[in-house]
Image 1 (cartoon, rainbow, N blue to C red):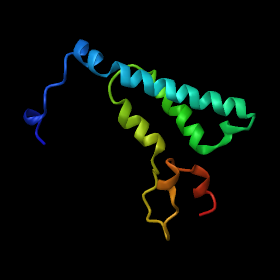
Image 2 (image 1 turned 90 degrees about the horizontal axis):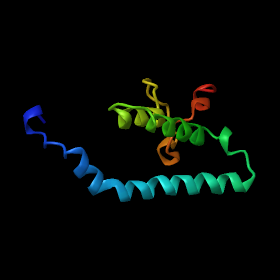
Image 3 (image 1 turned 120 degrees about the horizontal axis):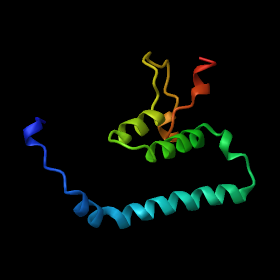
Length: 103
């Protein structure tokens, strides 16, 4: 798609008016999820998926564009060599760096 065929972004005020409530809900949903984990008393912070989620939440607070790409890369497998077999990482939602240590 060429630069000239991209739709014009909404003005900031219109974007906030249109999407604030749904994104407020999403943030509250994540907060409730983290609260449930804290109440569980388990060690959820050592899970690679949760480590990725916490890093991604940090990116949300950073200023500037490109957050979606940076967050996608946090969850993505950065390796370039083909895998000998499927490792089901897609079903887990995040790449496990420990999976490369034994490979």
